[in-house]
Image 1 (spheres, rainbow, N blue to C red):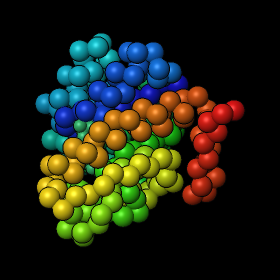
Image 2 (cartoon, protein in one colour):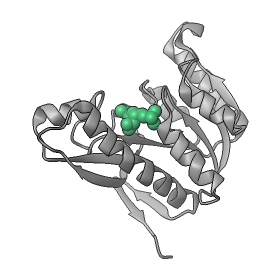
Image 3 (cartoon, helix red, strand yellow):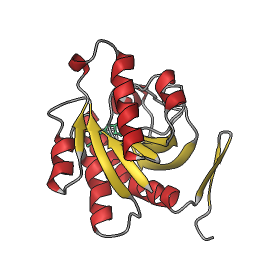
Length: 202
Ligand code: GAR
């Protein structure tokens, strides 16, 4: 399966995917890594292993649609079948979602539908939940509302800070994102309406 990744920053989730791919356990072809931030560490991580990169900095475009058109053309040129959002911090518009010809997945650092949007870990701590986690989901036109593919929980401790909770969640993200993408690439993930079924043993 031909995939591309969009990431805005550190790129540790991208790195988890690259590591599994280098080990031969992620049956995908990395067509490209893109970012809205020229200096994103994610771009360097991709370059290091020879994956083509592209930056789509906001200041290069008159408006959001022009930026999204550029990303859509890039995806089409590369023949991308699955777009992986890995810490991409710009919301894709309904226009983008409707025009994109590939599947789109995202990872979010909470147990959706709790705490969508920005600063999910802070939201969880401020709410006082005892359990949080992360969610891999298909992207639809809403904010973190698409069909849920995989989730994993982590405990929230009384002494947690945003940093300690984020780190605990991140470790689980690095496990379930490659696993979800592997299952999609193997054709084992089916989506009907909101319900996602994973055929692990067929
Ligand atoms: C991850 O925790 C990811 O779940 C989150 O940003 C971080 C990116 O880290 N994404 C969102 O909050 C999306 N709303 P990374 O750049 O090291 O992969």
